[in-house]
Amino acid sequence: MSIQVTTQETFDITKLSIGSTFSRNEMRFITLLYDQKPMYLKTPAMRVPFKPNQFSATSKWSINLEISDQCALLQANLTQLDQWMIEQGVKSCVEWLGAKPEKPYSTEVVAGKYTNTLKESKDPRYPPSIRANFKNRGSELLTHVYDHNSQPVDVGLENNQTHLSQVIKQNTQLAVLLTPSLWANTEKGTFGVSWSIEQAKIYPSPSTKQVLENLM
Image (cartoon, rainbow, N blue to C red):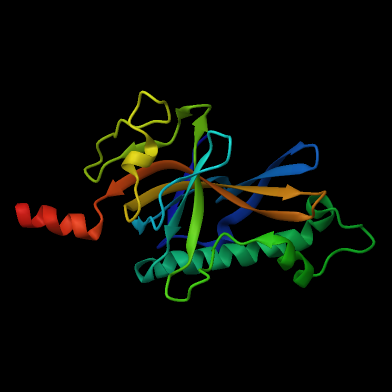
């Protein structure tokens, strides 16, 4: 199946649609489509404010990416997407959130049950961010990682490999190719979008970049 890559400059909210649903117990996993194809969002380079985070007792790793002023269009895109998701939640509140057919949820109620993609910082001095998950199969890293010259970086999650957290550090600049998946918990009545990193491109931090330029 072909994919559809969009960027902060080309993103069009009217091209979003809901795809197929996979159910497991109380969970619903729903594909998000862009122009009727699996959606991929290519981002500009963004600062990594904290080192990659490992979920307790699992091999799952995630990362936060700051959406600075240079990513103003991306911030607007994600704000639109969050609002669109709430609208879809109102339409599908019975199937996704466990509402009774005779008493569907209002927009205000659904908004309170939605986990925003755009995470506002508790400290107003810092920009909002987005959290994304690295793809893996057990201890095998499936996300493709490249340096700023587009060369593959030999990195993984195994003990005998250069670990992901050694390469992507605090203040690293990272451009990513993201793919979204909608999740809904009918028992808890909550829903949101999970973002997975298909590809990541590492750029030097601003201070490192300056040092490199001075050496050239």
